[in-house]
Length: 96
Image (cartoon, rainbow, N blue to C red; front, side, top):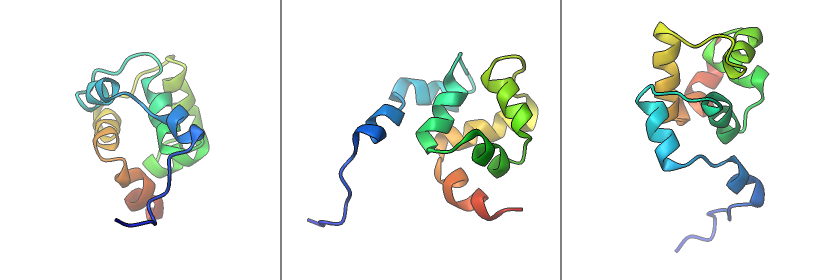
C-alpha cells in the first residue's frame, strides 16, 4: 500500500459536496448554492474559477447570487465540470 496518498483534512471535508448534489449538477438541475458549492469543492476563488471557464467575475457573481442563470454553452460547460472536475483543475488551467 502506498504511503504517498495524503490524508483528508478538515478543510477537505468542509469543501465536499454530496453525491446526490453532484448528480443533480451533472444532469443540469442546478439548485440554489450549487455553483458556489462546486467552485469551493474545486478550491478555487471566484476569480480563478471565472478565468478558467472564460467568463467575467461579474458573470460568475451574478450566477452565484442568482441574479442570472447560466444558459446554453455555459450551462453545458458547468455540467461537464461537475462530472469531470479535472477539466477545470488541470486541462482548462492552461487555456488562455
